[in-house]
Amino acid sequence: MTESLTTAIVQFNITLGDVDKNLATACAGITRAAARGAQLVVLPEMWSSGYDYRHLAQWAEQTPRVLLALQTLSLEKEVVIVGSLPEIEGDALYNTLYVIDKGKPAGSYRKLHLFSNMGEDRFLAAGQHCKIADTSVGRLGLAICYDLRFPEQFRKLALEGAEIICLPAEWPKPRQEHWRTLLRARAIENQLFIAATNCCGIQGKLDFFGMSMLISARGDVLAEAGEENTELLATFEQEEMIKYRSQIPCFKDRRPEVYGTLP
View 1 (cartoon, helix red, strand yellow):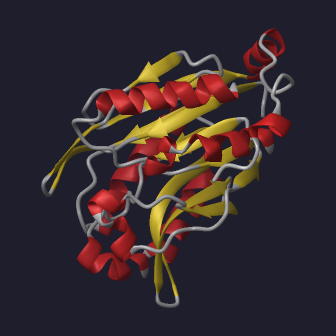
View 2 (cartoon, helix red, strand yellow):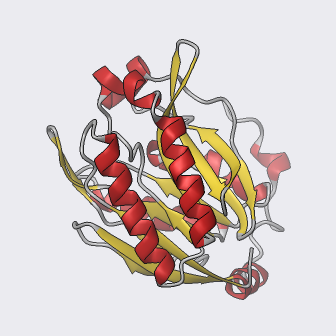
């Protein structure tokens, strides 16, 4: 990653099924964050439409148009943009995280773990691969919302060289403390930075608490949002991560030959 990386989250209340309104809100937030020096900007999960399951295929058809708008803005503002959108391929729908690097596609990732409590597994297909995106600002490990509860995925990303985890989410009340604890744990145990963007406000029957966070490789919360629309910025220092990994050499001290294969 770059020696000093100004990272931003754009947290907002997603309007179900209103792609144009959500796109305008996201672009305005990205523009404001870029004006404050952001080099990397992370948007929420399914930010163009929300989980409007019954019409999700319709909104997925607009994703190429949304991505073109982001590419134009990314090039103009010279920022890397990360966010999750509905993707359609054949008869399958995916929750896909896209990475755009200064106007160019830099990778995508399909959500591995689908939250059955909210019916994701009935409407969406699961991804099959962990992904890291190599970008101009560093190696980005990609994860989405419910993935946070599966530490194996994050360890794999760390072992494969991820420096920053970008995690868009729609994480509702009342599980605020799970969100905070798990995010800090993933940063601490893998000694890397985390940029996690939740949405906020009410969508249907769900109330989202926001609390988007930028977390250091030591697990310190550098910046944390409230429950309102906001842009939040913090600086990730590469030297801090390198120094912390030398002080507590967790990766060197691992003993994978003892752990065996997990069932």
